[in-house]
Length: 168
Image (cartoon, rainbow, N blue to C red):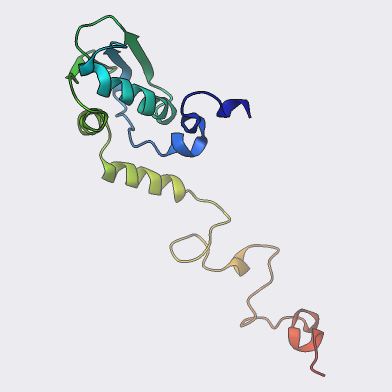
């Protein structure tokens, strides 16, 4: 498999990309990371870019993600907002990968309760295949073409095991 070659090929799997926790707010339209490819205080940012930027790109398809290398003495993240035209600077100098991830999640990402509500709304869609408590249909027998409930209409004898598989 050619996609499993290179450094850390796990980053290219769908399961890894979907596991990303950084879902940016709708207001964010450009997410820009400035860092250097060398230097001790850029190490956490390099790891963050290596491991989390593919997840950010996958989870936020409408956001432009830029990485600018070797243009600044200290690493930082700039977020440009669409509606107000303002921007936010996040200083990530000498922070570890986990600290950068936590700070970005706290500042410009959606809270976990909103993400859970959105996920529930997406799953709850009015799918005609859904039935049971809290859905449009209580039982599968309410769908046209399905066998009615045996409590209301008796099943034909050929569909009952008592007659199909008699005891010896």
